[in-house]
Image (cartoon, rainbow, N blue to C red):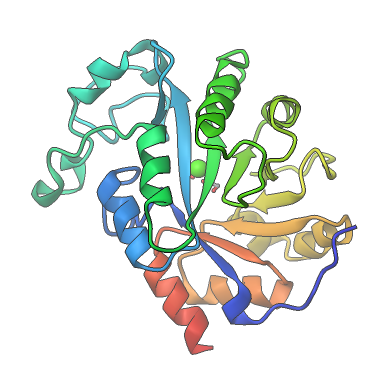
Amino acid sequence: MTQMQPLTARDVRVIAHRGASHEHPEHTLAAYRQAIADGADALECDVRLTADHQLVCVHDRRVERTSDGRGVVSAMTYEELSALDFGGWRGEQHRGAPVLLFEDLLKEALAADRPVGLAVETKHPTRAGGRLEAELVRVLKDHGLADGSAGLVEVMSFSRNALTRLNRLAPGLPAVYLIERRLRPVRPPFAGHAGPGIDLVRKDPGLVARLRAKGLRVRVWTVDEPEDVELCLRLGVDTLITNRPREVREYLHSL
Ligand code: G3P
Ligand code: CA
């Protein structure tokens, strides 16, 4: 069982959810550069596979909410996605932001002047029949990051099947089991971390202690408000996933 040490506010890890996405359009290079500048320990990104098997950072199944295009990401090629504007929906100043390739995000994190991690969430992996995980591990291998030894990359999913597949392909990568509503049995090494949403934690604060008692480390998403940061700290959460990395980091330092 993992040793659980009491945490101080400054020990808590801050992960930027889709980048500094309160300020910038989510999953854009600008959002991630801001998150790095804001002191985020790691960058969260959702990955999907395009029709031509490229991994792109897009949350939704379809592109309508976050771009000026129409269509399903998995049915579009990378070239088709590259013709769309993924910034203008958040205002004129963001217009022209292109879709972000996962590998370009990885290079950006590696180029930072301090260690910046990546928390990669696989989206709708079942439909891709394992190809998404295979491509993710291939890209990570190309950068020497698939064995987990650099301590920079974690994989997250709501899908236990996806985590199991990832564990087979890359057993050294830390895995985070995301929990939206219902807790299904989970244990290391299948996943060493659990990630409940803040709504669930507010409703059932005892959940964090139950997860910790199983030896799991606990991270909570999406924690943007000071009262939620305080609740998570009281409960022993060790990692916060937030749209506002600078504010959360500053708040933690002020405690
Ligand atoms: O970090 C976990 C969180 O991102 C899961 O929810 O919908 O924002 O991907 P979602
Ligand atoms: Ca996500």
